[in-house]
Image (cartoon, rainbow, N blue to C red):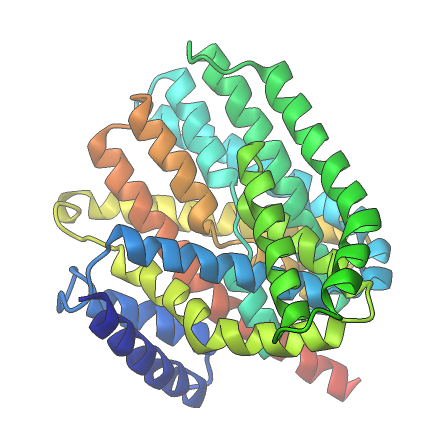
Length: 382
């Protein structure tokens, strides 16, 4: 029963998050791990149902919306060069190494490219939470990670469309690019001209919480528009948050949306990642999982870090940025699903890659914690 499952998830995620913090780790790590315990992989108390996935989707959209609200645009503009370097090199290194790994695994050339492309994806929703807990979301590192995530998403999706057209799928590269250009053009125009007017018109309405409702309408509309045009919904939600951050309603929206989000939707999102894990049948591929997990972590970590270093960051900050890009999250899972559907991935390799994605997601928060903690200690000594 969904209502009982929600009660269990909320109770367990808060307790697990608290334990994680007491052990010196971000709370998100505890929420991810308790999801595995509650799900079919261990206790089977919570099932990976469609309605839980929908609630989880709302959670990640709201999380990125909040990240947009908190974005310091002055710092974001300064990090434009870093975001570009991190986004591009954070794709090139995993893509090339993933391709070589695919050839070693005796995959066809196009399957090897697909594997490399999947390992190039990134999802910063987990990183956003870790950055928030360390008060780093508004830092130059946080801005670089968020900016690079947008660039990463665009480049990976365009590359995926190109690969699908080569694989014989009915996907036209020109159409894909045009749809994305249209999305960003329309989103920027709406953010600039329509969003402020909409909030001002809603504010005087004689019903409760009109501004918050208007903000949610903007958030979900931008997320839908992004998904409809082939851009991740989280990018649309992030842009919506940035748009509202320029209005006079920023603080009111942030405070109430954060309350709504962290009381139910965001905990469900983090816990549901663990709930979705199924370990059946992966035992015989354990060494493949270990090898691909190490490859996925190191290539994104050092590829993105190299980009940050070339943009002028010191090595400690560069590694922090690289760590923030490690999690593959839902973006990689979406690509894996496409690969399974188009026969570019076998059922066995699909299962292996789902576990690899989970490993990168679990590793990201503690990795960021260690690097940024050391950085803060160095700054205090200096």
